[in-house]
Image (cartoon, one colour):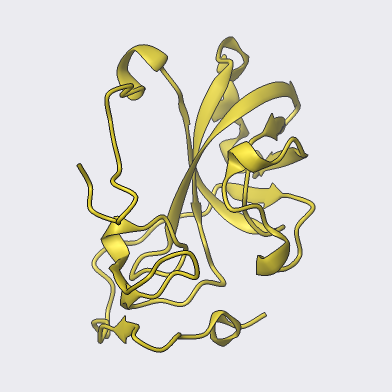
Length: 165
C-alpha cells in the first residue's frame, strides 16, 4: 500500500516538507491488528473490542518490566502508510476544510498517532491490548503508562464545527 492510496481530496493543501529531518527515532516494535486496509480500520479505538498485539523488539523488551502494573497504556506509533505533508484536509464528515492540527487524521507532516489502550496481558515481549485503530504491522514508537490522575481532562471540549473550545 502506498501513501498515494490515501489520496488528496479537493480543497486539501500540502506543505512542502524540508529535504532533511530534524530528528531520528527507532521503531521499538510493531502493532498487530486485524485490519489490512484503511477502510477496514475503526475510526477510533473505542469503536472496537478487537484484541491486538504489541510486539516489542527483543532489544527493547527489558523496558516492559513492571508494565503489567498498569491497566491502560498510551501507545505512540508511526502511521507509515499515511500521506505526509497535508496541512488542510477535507474530512468526509465535515462541511468544509479543516486544518490538520485540528484533526486526528493519520495524514499529517509527522504521522505520529496516539492510542490509549487497555492492557489485557503480557507474554514475553508481547502485550495483548484492546483499543487500537491502526493497520496491521504499524511501527511502534513508544509505550507509556496511562495515569488517569494526570492524563484525563474531563473538562476538555471539542466544538463539533471543528474549533477547539
